[in-house]
Amino acid sequence: MPEEVAQPRTYEVRTFGCQMNVHDSERMSGLLEEAGYVRAEPGSGTTDTTADVVVFNTCAVRENADNRLYGNLGQLAPKKAAKPGMQIAVGGCLAQKDRDTIVSRAPYVDVVFGTHNVGKLPVLLERARVAREAQVEIAESLEAFPSTLPTRRESPYAAWVSVSVGCNNTCTFCIVPALRGKEKDRRSGDILAEVEALVAEGVSEITLLGQNVNAYGSDIGDRQAFGKLLRACGRVEGLERVRFTSPHPRDFTDDVIEAMAETPNVMPQLHMPLQSGSDTVLRAMRRSYRQERYLGIIEKVRAAIPDAAITTDIIVGFPGETEADFEQTLHVVREARFAQAFTFQYSKRPGTPAAEMAGQVPKAVVQERYERLVALQEDVSWAENKKQVGRVLEVMVAEGEGRKDGATRRLSGRAPDNRLVHFARPEEPVRPGDMATVEITYAAPHHLLAEAPPRTVRRTRSGDAWAARQAAPDAGGTGGKGVLLGLPKVGVPDPLPAAEGCAAH
Image 1 (cartoon, rainbow, N blue to C red):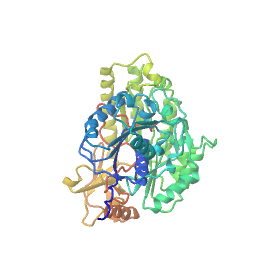
Image 2: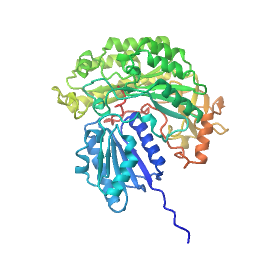
Image 3: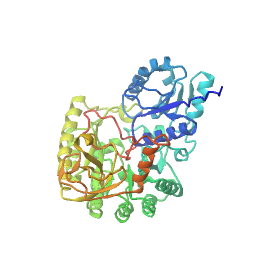
Image 4: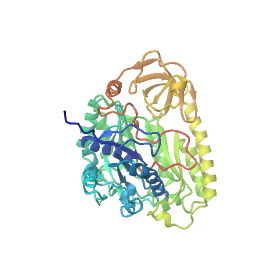
């Protein structure tokens, strides 16, 4: 009788937190697939998984991040008990922070690994399987730059490219530097080689990603390194769109604005965290800029790139924030005319200086201010979007951006400035990654609408790459289900939003 062939073990990666974590999860998936694992079919809930290995890539930004993790682990424990050989691994920022408590609180976890040793995941899983005991390994410093690891990209047409890891800032509300370490930059040649390889595979949009992306070059003392990198991306043939997230106002130099304005494939879009409009609060946050400096950058960007859409992050209710401080935040929102603001109610981040500060603002006050800020930004976003009516835009067709596309017979995608656009489906087939030229006829606060079919559709190499992945979804693809861009998804903020911005400084 022929020898029975063992079925490959399956895996699932569950991601919490920021863009950096999602990109790390792509690497975890790549490592597991290189080790012979295959992706499990997605389940419908926390416990509905068919995977032999479930990896939690955690975030430590919010106050209740640990409760969320242990709740998820607890729901999965009976599934593991009923399935011999199943393994659970916990990585990411919370693992780096709580290395000594995860296994004691969840003794059925097999592997705990940190942000600096992602590459050890397959080895640790095998070691835990053979030894039949939990493996906890947390590196204190980066073992290898993550981009040297294999990566299973979630989108065939848009990709993240890390330019650095870590952060040198000391913002009092943020625990990221303690968990991801000091900033470490990649060589520009390595970055461009990755970009060129992605373009050769069909990617036409890249988002340069860093904890503090425009501080790139601090390792070598070149304050103009990021502007030079943007210009170099402009010379990559076939690369249609370049974005970056998230810059810090302190490091935002005029040469970056010039590079954005003068490099055709760098998109007219900027995501620049504000956090607060009050100089007093910014000082307490250890943010090394003030309102005047911030608004000055916005003014320069608008002068150089008139059509730029500017988005931001804002924290409401930071310790010590008075009504007068909050009014200064509202003032900046009115002046800056953000296309979108991702707003967060302050919550204590354990291990940060702000968590121990006096003057913690009562929850009811934070909630009331938050609602006023959201209402103001909603008005600003709608007014800014109405200015787009009548414009003809080239939209990169996306997948999964329009939840009602099936019912409305529409397609969705992103304009050059990253605004979400829904448009009427044409008769001809259009694939994610293709480009559709549409005329905007209606504006809502969080999206634009083109009620007529596209004027033209341009089939692209990215569309070809998407089609190829659909034809062979198991060959490194996801069947079309993937992450598109390196920015938070546009939409109405939830009353208590999960912190998506630990990569946004």
